Length: 167
Length: 167
DNA sequence: CCCATGTCAGTATCACTGAAATAA
DNA sequence: CTTATTTCAGTGGTACTGACATGG
Image 1 (cartoon, rainbow over the protein chains, first blue to last red):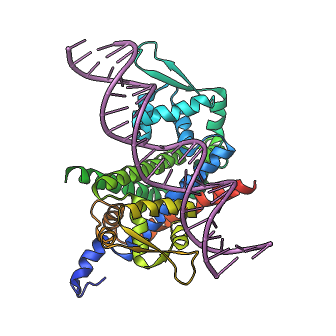
Image 2: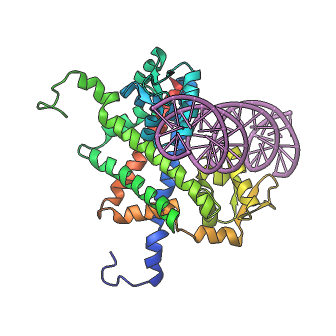
Image 3: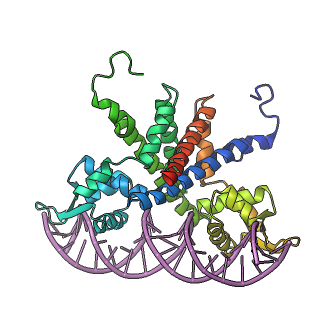
């Protein structure tokens, strides 16, 4: 596009880089997705008793039980203190059991209770279910592309964040 | 799919529908993206004085000034009471001006102040900038596909939320 | 009186920073 | 004493529900 006269408008150069309508629309969709995720998360809390992040925590714990609190924080890309709160709520709900590591008293080991394991297996009405359905509705061969889009987006946002730190 | 021989495992049938490793990985990336968005939003607040949602509000208001509060809520897919809070913070920061609609006293019209307009134009270090960069780094022709992935995802999450309401 | 628009009060989760407790 | 791990206290933004005030 604009191959013949690429520099037709000087300001188009700048606009294309940061202010195009495409970008703005994409931005809108991105925040809308974010909003939908939160909304579904809230509904999950009403119907399942756990939010989206909470269920993700259950899922990760269930995968490699018992799991250290720090490992969970790292897997969820969260600050340890944030995980403390999430686990506290899950513990209060009787979904996660906490015990100190016998070998290293500083550490805390997390494991699912029976009820926690049940929710781990319960997919109806979850974000995971939505993702699963979306992946199945995707034209064949598009799965890798879909994932790459999300990864690129995440990487780009992460880069923007890091660049701000130094500059 | 899986017609020839890939269906080596029977349990793959159920797993594919709701518990496959692919889905779980995708879910992880999705929440990671969500987390990055929040993190960048927080950094924006430190460097620009506005969060991600707040800047999106500025952007939308700047697009069609003056804008009713309800229209902003609708454009951002938020509850009116949520917008009240966002606009209150923007107003307190001197970025948005509020006045009652002369023609209809129930309505509130929003407009940018000079400082608000400056932030509207300032893209460095924003989510928009990250999105813009990502779109530009995308292989040509992938833009539409990228957008469709996000739309599909949003639609699927929205559908899951709605289905929960009735069932 | 009824409906629309917006705000306010109350609630909850998420997520951070910084400080403290505990154990290696 | 130093380091690692986790928790606690405090802060702030997002976003809802439900109640309310105000205006058409």
